[in-house]
Image (cartoon, rainbow over all chains, first blue to last red; front, side, top):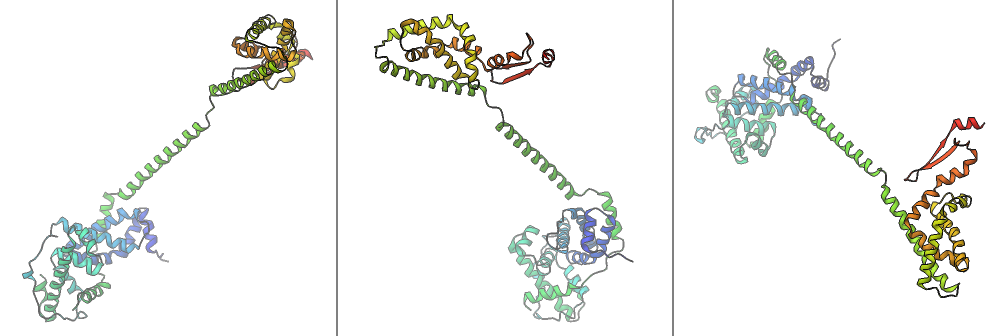
Length: 188
Length: 241
């Protein structure tokens, strides 16, 4: 009979440094965390690096986890911070594209339901690094502009500005995609 | 499309998105964990525990030090000085009583010259008869064992009374009051008197009947701190039996 472990059991095992528990925890949460890595990374290869470095941090820091708050929330923060560090290390956070490069589209409506997740992920990965970080943190993770400014070492105004530009950039790409064009030509 | 609606649509798209993880990623993670077995958080916790124990040890040391300070033995000097103050107070009271008695009961005029003359005479007689006094008064003082100072004052009364009667034949209570002041002001005599009539001496006198010559079954001794020591000679008991 196969024994079923809860996340709490696996966390306890990881806190004792048990390799089997570490592997089981990795198998249980790696997919969700890889999704985060893919959204923050500029490419799938970079997402894999973030995933690996994030799990190393998790297993090194898990003895300090005291069960205050949800374990998944704790994991997500570690992977988001790892993604920010990775992108910052590559010195691409300050990359800004000019407003002229944003394709201004008159049409502002599109069918979100028909959009494939894979296509949306590629669009997000195609965002400039600064825009991608701010958009992911604010629109999907739910951070405030103050928290984003502290994490990315930018001003709150810069955070708001980059969020606005990221939305405009994504919307324009989505409109093009819905028109039946090849989204790859826009996302690239 | 409003920004909030747009953000919500993107969020919902990713809610159930669980991509396939790379196959060989775990082996890379496991290798990296083997290369870095140390856990920084655990290290910090260990240092914190060490400092905690140091703080506890320091607190215990301070508490022990304070405890020893408060239960330390009291100073001998303070005890003796307090005792002398009581004696001086008693002497002053007795002096005041003596002067009142001189004026009221005798009816005679006692001037300073007479008083100093009687003091000199009393002092001389006292020195001559000191050895005899010590022996004669032991039986009477055995009843006042518990208080050393009052016993000495009683002895002074007994000594001075006959000496003054021989001087001018005044009533005994007047004589007693006249000689009392010089007795307590003569420090050398006080020291000898204290040594001769110590509690240990009195007790030794009381239990002398159970002695056997030089070998005493029971013997007492007191030191400068007022501690009374009792010695029992079992060998002497055997000889006596």
